[in-house]
Image 1 (spheres, rainbow, N blue to C red):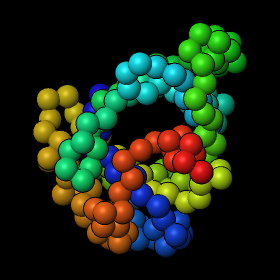
Image 2 (cartoon, rainbow, N blue to C red):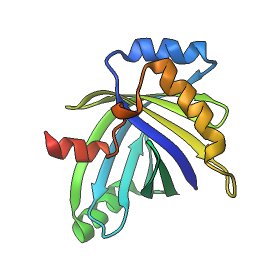
Image 3 (tube, rainbow, N blue to C red):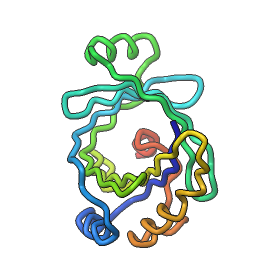
Image 4 (cartoon, one colour):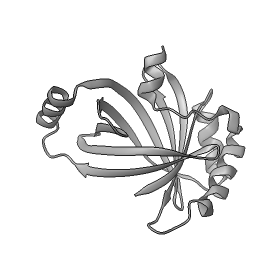
Length: 168
């Protein structure tokens, strides 16, 4: 699967929420997430624990202008505790990122309003790209949301939350 994504700091999650509502976005869920990142040679591998469920997520990103094009695979995890222990022992853990995420959607675009422990408030936009579809077809919707939120291309963050944590 693919998505076109943008990540950025936000001063006011409430204001961003209200601005997205005016564009027709709907809040779908509040998610409590813990992402455990593992050492891998290529891309990124994490186990996401979310509201009682878990999944293994592998992804890698390519620069696509000011935005990132991400290829990813997600596999459900039936035994998170045991899977976490095996992967941590075999690969080593890079970082653990805890966050609370408000998920908002419109068409194929997801807006995440994140409160990330020790890092602060962020927004993340993901336009889900169907197989064989051109990511450029979703760029207009992503750009519209970025403009409405007051995010310039120079404000975009090209690294994961765990990489931001490593810098603190």
